[in-house]
Image 1 (tube, rainbow, N blue to C red):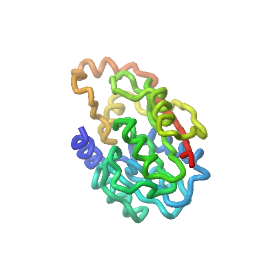
Image 2: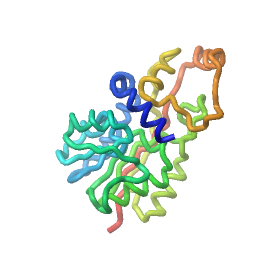
Image 3: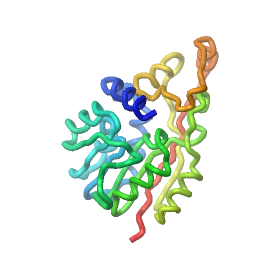
Image 4: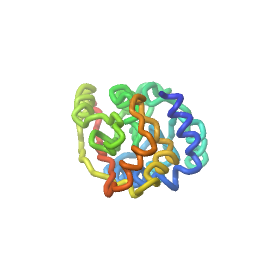
Length: 222
């Protein structure tokens, strides 16, 4: 799965900024709860830098599973490495904060959130699509209750959280183009496939498609 994701995001690096409108909106909303996030920051699944461009800290490092995405981020913000969210290539307490936007649903959230907490001194801020998002395609989004349990299990304090629906502003075949050009058309439930006719039936009369996104800021207890 990780090799597939790396390949798809790598191919999408040139089209991502144009098509990833829900991801960009999510980054803007996430930044609204990161006002006290400063110091040395790790952007997990940094992509092209939607979160970083909204943070004031000059000391930010990106990590992404895709080499082209990491290169793109490095050209904009100075530092980035290729890495796996579930096995971050950094020592404990290497950063003041770790942030992540629209990424962790591609991971084992228990591992990825745990890794973000491990490398952080103060806390983590996350925007994470959860159950109820674009459910016509059967993607296994994590449930918010599981996320809350994970945070509690690591002894962290939930400072603030909320859930917001973010519209996918495309209709018809542009819905499929959106997933393709953002590198997000892969479904780890490989047994779910649709014929062209079935897809046409699903998207032709679709009037609403959205991501249900959990935003949270949690602090590490000292």
